[in-house]
Image 1 (spheres, one colour):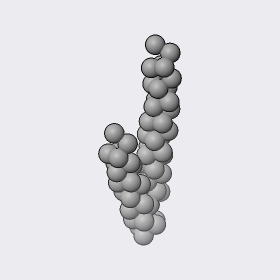
Image 2 (cartoon, rainbow, N blue to C red; image 1 turned 120 degrees about the horizontal axis):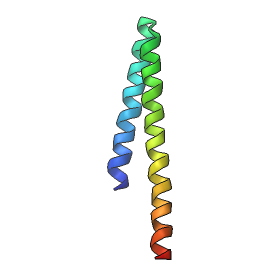
Image 3 (cartoon, rainbow, N blue to C red; image 1 turned 45 degrees about the vertical axis):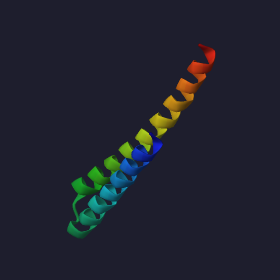
Length: 63
């Protein structure tokens, strides 16, 4: 399950870099903000995946 999530995160980061590059070319703040938000979403998805993985392994040991 980790491989598809990592691939999706890499795609999100690539998209955010593309958005930020276009924002720099066109001097648009909204594209820069969108790129930042996409990058933050990718990071948050990885954090949640690892937190839930640790939580689920702990709960399976306890139960």
